[in-house]
Amino acid sequence: METNNFPLELLGNDNYANWSVKMKNYLLGQGLWDIVETSSSKPPKPDDDVVEFEAWRKRNDTTLQAIQSSCGMDILSRINNNCSAKIVWKMLAKMFMESNGHDKLIQTEDDDSRIDEENSSSSDNTGQEREDDYPDLVKAVQSRDWITARDFLKLHPTASTAVITLMGGTVLHAAVEAEQELIVEELVNMISEHDLEMLDNAGDTALHLAIASGNHRMAECLITKNRRLVSLRNANGELPVAQAMGYGHKELARYLYSHTPLRFLVEGYDGFKRLREMKLLRIQFQQLLSLMSDVIPTLDTITTYQHRIVAPAIFSAIRRGNFEFVYFIVKADSNILRFYDDIERRNIFHWAILCREYGTFSLICNIKRKNVLLNMLDESENTIWHMAGKLTKNTLVDQIRGAAFQMQREVQWFKEVESICPPSLKESLNKEGLTARQLFTRDHQEMRKEGEKWMKSTATSCTVVGALIITIMFAAAFTIPGGNNQDTGLPILVHDKLFTLFIVTDSVSLFSSSTSVLMFLGILTSRYAEEDFLKSLPRKMMIGLFTLFFSIATMMIAFSAALFLMLRGKYLIVVPIIGLASVPIILFVLMQFRLLGALLVSTYGSGILDRKIKLSF
Image 1 (cartoon, rainbow, N blue to C red):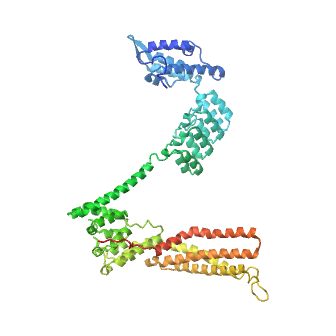
Image 2 (image 1 turned 30 degrees about the vertical axis):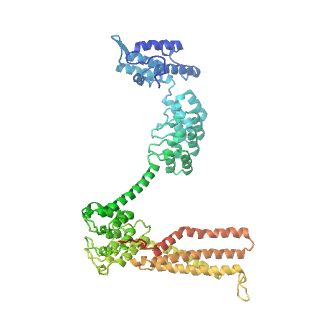
Image 3 (image 1 turned 45 degrees about the vertical axis):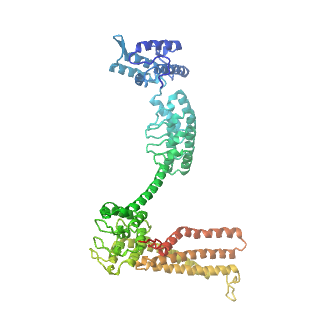
């Protein structure tokens, strides 16, 4: 409450005598002294005479405002919890006592207790609602009785912002929780914008409760009255739009998003600032690389930096797949290729193969002086071929989805490294006594089993579908539309073009489904060796999926042709049915063609080695 706009001097700790005289004269002039006069009669009760009580309440509020407005902040903090002007006046009189000609602030425990008793005894008569009145208001709201609730709020105006629920909510919170839309709209019209932002004990506004129930109408009503509500976070720090998304209320979330200012959506996340920083970081990275490329060739004592700066940085870049960094550093000084780490004594080529970093691998394979790297062994006497057979935490296989695809990629890496491995090292044993092939088999045993499980599961499902199509198409070939001529045995519609289409598509569907079943049977009976994942199993899967799709498509065409033959001229019946016949084809394309495309790319794609990288060192 503002305390500096009142014409009287502010009450402090040392001017009570002068202040009380001036305040009494002011109240006498305004006709309000009887409100605080100790000899005046008791104030009326609201249950006795509503009109008389309302008149007294207004005069009491005016008097109380005059007293509070003329008090300093330290005094105001002691009396602002009381709503009776008479009690406040008595409190001030008891708080101040004259001593040696000066006003001194003295308050005893006995005074406090007496004042509290008087305050509590008269609280019902000052317009402050009793706790036992609130259940009636809550009951009226929950039972959709707006008339009773409205009358109660008119009789007790402060009840509209009072705590009336067990969760510390207002009457608006209670109405929203009960999903009483009409009462919520009436309360919103009655309550000020600021009061709509009141929180319950859980830290929720009425809007947060409306979002929790997914009530679009109540949320829109609240936001229309106070647009600041969309920017108020709940106790979990969530904006209303984020809360709506969390509850799965998509339409409500779209509405809230359209009404939430952008600055609140990016608040705390530095959205655009983060993008700008990433762009600047990229530019700074390129500038730093350029400077490093210029400085490294000028270092006469490069070996002193080997285990301190350059080598660890390169190995870290390989593990993270940062090919650009490796490229610029190696291009600046090719002698860095001979660097190795202190623990495992692995060079750049070892790390590139172990981490399956095809960019660095291709870079080194295109270098003319790579033979020295090919013959180097690490601390465990592993060759570069052993590196291709190892699976460690640094091996990036999770970038490929599916155990079968991962196994195929691992075999491709193994074969590619085998092609460049010196013949003298192909049968070399490491310290564990394993060749590269034995190491590959040991480390990839679990991956091979998972790939086998996926292949068999897919093949089994597709075999069932293919077998059903074979059965249907074989039976349809001998149950032709129109029947046969009893004299010649030939089909009656043999010269009809639609009949020819039916026979051809039926036959193609039968042959295609038979081919797909054979391919899937080949997958089921495979021995599942490591090399089978390279091309044999993927090729069978591709042929099986394609022929299965082709058999389904031709089966639908044969079905449509048969309908035209039997229901010739009935286009209102035939055309919608033929349209529905395309649904299985579309579903198959959506579900299986992505798999078919992935198999095609992984099996017949560009491979591991990128031969387009050309270097002069």
